[in-house]
Every structure is written in structure tokens, then in C-alpha cells.
Image (cartoon, rainbow, N blue to C red; front, side, top):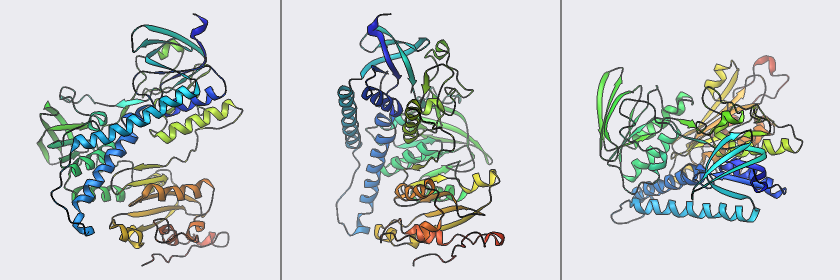
Length: 481
């Protein structure tokens, strides 16, 4: 192997964590190469987080246009031009990819476009996109290969060539009747967006509720939202078989407690989970083990079973969020510089960008009960504060979970306007180890969503009697109306 093929660092995959590793190592003077097979900047930039939120925001604008008379605005006939929706998204993605390319050029990191495969310890063979082949080796290797949408082995589903989120975000037409398989984040976000663009939408969930990991009150609120918007939601529905071709005409035979029925539509969106991109890349040749679910096996420092090889993000089994991949990088980089950071006990927030959005950090009630954690709970409808009235967006609620014997905040969830930003305030208090009265007694600007935290946490029930002498008892008064 020639000296030119030797690097200090090789990163397999240019997604969030991978590109941050490359950027940091390059700044430290290490000769660094990034191998990327397709999407410069990773899925978040190209086919997931950012383009999805771009399209979802356009759908919100379409919804607001549909409510124009409510806001005192007069206008003529309105139509959604999906080619224009696509063009706006494509323009944003192209700009962001250019930013990434410019940063690679500025850092001096080498971006190698092609399919990478391990052929030995810390040694990667790359089938170059423009033809030819290279073999590169490094002192340190970082695996950041991500995941892809799962198409389960349901009879006829693969032959029907369903869309995943990737194809759905490239649509330049409005599906006549979209059948969404899955009531998780992707199905909820894109199902609502397509309904607002004008599609008839049927959402099929095999479980008893939408958003299966959330409390029943959250699931019910989302279900009611979807039904109010004209989305047909089928719960407890098992797909028996699929016929036809997505984009033309499809039929889906379902079974639930009432028997069997057939749903006909024009398009299918499969939103049924994700599969790690760890097969066929030679991990075994490098001594890198995978778990039963196909993730790269790592410890709490994200070290793999091979010396001087780390895995980052979704392929390592980290929670499937861009901000977690970034934190994975922060952990690895800190530890390489003498730190002692770990993935254990991370406080991971997330937001589902329905409209209104849902956001949560920490425990919900279901998790607290499953782990035998005693808790107190307070809930507040969002229209108990004035900001939603000014927006004409009064649907939703917020909920706080507090330890039963101390004033420690265990979790927070909200379904309503500006949910992600509202959650961030509570997360900051949790990270600082602050008791809930710090939010209850704070002076927040008016009218904002954040001032609702005062009234929410004022509703936390008092401590148990044997704790009263040790801890301040919260007021039970709440609401600002």
C-alpha cells in the first residue's frame, strides 16, 4: 500500500457525526479522508430532517391559506403546485450541500465519493463513483453509515414499490389517495402534510394507538387532530397482502378485530422503521461486531470491538436523531482529548413536526410506571395561556412529570404551538438539576408559550406528607385565564 493511501483518520459516511469528526480532526492537523457513497452531508441534509421540515412548513402555509377568511384575508382560488413545493425544497438542499462542500475544501479534508467496504483492520476499499478503486488505511476509523427505511416482508409490498420518505419528498404531484403504513414520526409528519396538499390519506397502524411510545393522552390528541383534518386512521390493522403498483393503483387487504377489508388507493408510503446500513460493508473483515438488530456493537464511549474504531449515530444504535449523532461526536472527541464522557443517562429531547408539533424530554407517565418510579403530574391545556389565542392555534396541552418525593423534574411533554422551543426551556432546567419551582416562580415574557410553564408547574400536587418538612410544597393554583 502506497504512502499516499495512508491517513491519520478515515470516516466512513459524511452524515452529521462523521462530518463533525472530519472537521475537528482536520483542524487538529490530522490527514483525514471522508468516504461518502451518495449523500454529501448525510440523510438529514438531503432526504430526511431538513427537507422534510421544509415540505411540512409548506403544507402549513397551504393550511393557513385554506383558513384565510379566519384571518380576515380575501383571496381567489388556491391550488397547490407540487412542482413548486419540490423546487423550494431542492433549492434549500442544494444550498446546504454547497455549504458542506465549501467546508470540506476549507478544512483540507479529502472527500472520496464511492462505496466503501472494509477489507481488513482499519482498511477500506472504495469503489469510486467515477470508476476505479482505491484502498485506504488509517490510524483511526469512524463508522457513520446510518440507516435506511425498512420495507418489511409483507406479501406483495415490495412488488408494489412503495415510497419511503425519500421518494415522498421528491413528489411533484399530489397523490390522489395515499395509504400510509405506520403511525410513527415519519408517517404522522408526511401523512398530515400530504393531506394538506390535497391528498386523500388513509393511515394504517398495526398497534392500538398512534405514536406508540407516547402516553395515551398524547396519542388520542394526535388521533383527534388527524380525524378533524379528514385523515382516515385505522388502528389494530394488520396488512395481509398488497396488490398493484404504488403511483398507479394499489389495493391492500387488512385484518382487525372486526374482520377483513380491502383499502384501495393510488400510492403507498412505507413508514415502518429503519434498518442499519451495516450489511455488506465488510465489518467482519475489520473485527467489528454487530448486534442482533444489526447495529455496530459499541460500549458507552462508542468504541467498537475493533481497536481504534468508533461508530457514530444511528448505525451505532444511538437514538435516531441528528442531534444525538452530534452528541456522539462530542463524546468521542472529548474522550480522545482526555475526557471521560459516556452515552449513559443522556437527556435526549425530540420533536415530531406535525402541526401542532409534539415535543418531549425525559420520562413520560408510561415509562415512569414501567420503571416503578413514583411521580406527580400536572397538565395544562395550551389555551389556558394567551399566546395560542393570538395565533388561533389553541389545540393541545403541556404536561410535567415531577418526582413524588423531591422537586426534581422527571419529564415534560407538550402538544401545541412552538412545542420544541418550549421543551428546550424545561430541558435546560433539568440539565441544571433545578427543582420545578424555578420555572413556577420565574418571570417569563408575555405573551409567550414559555409563560405557560409557570401555570403548568403551579399545578404540581403537593409533596407526600412525610416530605413536607424537607421540601417546599408546590402551590396547586394554576391557569392564567
